[in-house]
Image (tube, rainbow, N blue to C red; front, side, top):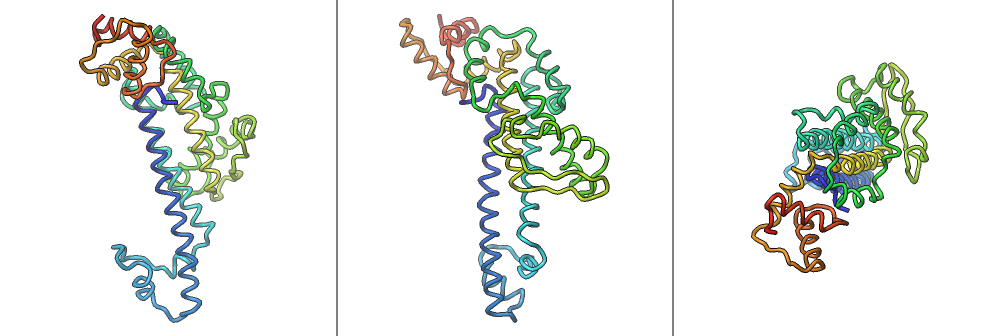
Length: 305
């Protein structure tokens, strides 16, 4: 199912690209650890330069000590580094998405924080979907809200989860990984809704308790599970915000860019097929009501009557 807003489609593509990079990289590091350890077991006198020549020749990577890589860091520690990398980049994707989807609905620059807090997001959605669009609500909302990732009923729980992981990330970036009051409070708020049932997940979300003054911990499996929370947040809010009357401008721009010089058939069945093709070319969800989309295109002079 395609999301309604271009910013959501772009953000989902960025998350896919992130994991397309992370998983092969993690697998490559896992294999290199064993290769270097095996080589050093056979050649204990091997120098750092000799290891680089054997394992890194042609890569262009020069300033690395492979001995230290496999000796001073465990695989679990390196997985935590990967987890931090994924989490930081996933938040960057989400925050950019939140800004861009609200800008598309006429909100000021950097308004995205409205979609990052459990109390603020529902109010922002309610305000932006008053009034609603007859076209998008009829044609696209039934499809968008039917996605397996759509979960309006758990929106508050998902955003509470978001706040916990965001505070852990803040501690890692700004406080050397040491937990403070913000992290403790976010964990306390998240604890009651952290079960797989409350979050609508197939398995438990892996995370650690927070102790003020102690290092925060990240688990790669937990961060991967949290990324699914981000996806569900974006899909859910994309669907809800698509009902906004302000979303008509997004719809018009998308259809106009995908239509070109075309005359739609007078036959209802053929016209429905044409409208669905135009929507597909525009990256939009498959409309359940093609006639209302046709009427919208005629009213906005995207196609001739």
